[in-house]
Image 1 (cartoon, rainbow, N blue to C red):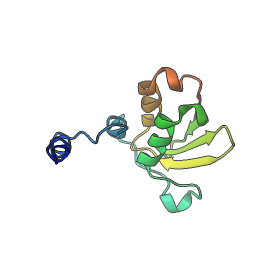
Image 2 (cartoon, rainbow, N blue to C red; image 1 turned 135 degrees about the vertical axis):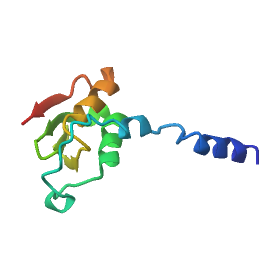
Image 3 (cartoon, rainbow, N blue to C red; image 1 turned 180 degrees about the vertical axis):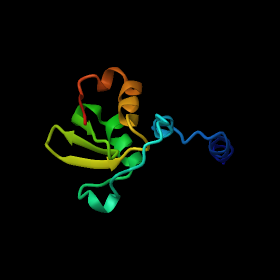
Image 4 (cartoon, helix red, strand yellow; image 1 turned 60 degrees about the vertical axis):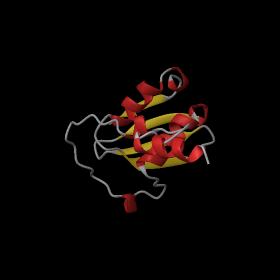
Length: 112
């Protein structure tokens, strides 16, 4: 029962708990770009938060990240799996990788 107040306090303070990537979800370059694609146009689409989770929680599995002017982001895993998402604004994916730091330094970066 003691865990309930702690859990409630964490929720109220905006802390999602261990393993939360909420700081990464909020990154945005605020450049004002509008998406040129929609999720239904991307056959391997995952939400932005799911893509960030993959990148931050399993950086060793990521080989390459590519962004386009349409805000489409392709994440290619080392096993050749393709993950596609739409970033909130241009270059936001690169902000995530920079914030990740050393674990993400090996990831190849491509931009249109």
